[in-house]
Length: 198
Image 1 (cartoon, rainbow, N blue to C red):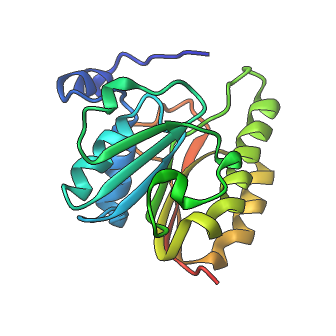
Image 2 (cartoon, rainbow, N blue to C red):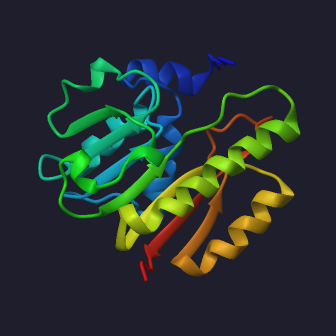
């Protein structure tokens, strides 16, 4: 269900040449928790349309690299950015880091992905949690020891319970509802800093 909020952040994104207003959620998270650094290799899961990828590419600079994957068709507008590579892939099908032409695990994994929403709260919450659980399942294969992580979650009792069980995976574990999130939205973001990749 496409939903465009034509507000201050929507207009700002247009002016700043970002693909979506959601970029300001990542910006706020990064300013607060320092998720991304120059030279980082970053994996953006479910990157479409690509505003988080755009932001990350600026932060990591020429020495860094951003890999975006999504089950949707590649956004060719991102292919012109020198330190960005995007793939049409499902993370469950990725068998090796070499598929991304990288030899080492990622310094940071970011994800603003959400399920196709139905408008039925319980269904949407369950689908969101399934995505979150899937990403946590893959973290050991993709995120390096000491790495950082950001993911979007639709709030629910089950999500809170699952996330509490994951806290020990990181040195620091935070929840944040960024200012640019719509007031009616039940989404929030989980920020993990200092991954303990056992």
